[in-house]
Image (cartoon, rainbow, N blue to C red):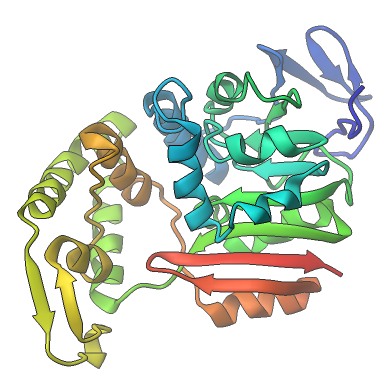
Length: 331
């Protein structure tokens, strides 16, 4: 029997479940392939743009699918991004867990088997692929097609909330966090990753490219990424090393020796390549960065201000080459 019940995400009323729908006094939500659909698509709505972008990505990408990527391959990537160790995964043991922005379920492969009850939500159609990704999970994941601003749960329902690279892809990252954290029990922990502000040239170039392609169809945007990915692949194979003899403060460059491809990636424009992912998935990674209309970047001071305002006690705000991993307790 499910521990956390559904509620109407717009009225907070209880929902009665039938074989085909969740029903409240004034609303009726379809259940499609076992997954309730709360998303209300409207082409004039900001969230619709997000839905379109990531529905395409998770329908096309095989990243995280158990048939293509082993548990170990996923674990290494996710633990690094979320600043977790193998021992830290005990945080999820026998807990009621919510994954906000589950995508196709790649990250959730780490925590869903450990949870007492696992819930995953996503605004995009990738949620239906997540069902396949997590089909062998021991805790029978409970998934919903929902907008993080309108989550189908009562406040203070979860022991752990996790969100890997999602909050910054909404119209306002702070408001996204404000919508999510109330679902956490007092004393519970929220773990999330968001982008950081990059070097000045990288900020300019990324915004310029995003402006050029964000109005395109997903297919056309994906095609526009291919020359960038080919350049990244070529530079990576050449293994060119450069040395900056001193800092260049105006440009945010730090002295030292760099691989040229990584230097451009970190300082000029996103130029992603990873051998283990191959061309298609590397190109999808570049699409993931440039195509979403919303890809906000933030500072550590901003995050600290949010935590103070929302009464969240930080455990970790750790900076890496592309963003911040944050762990905080609700007080």
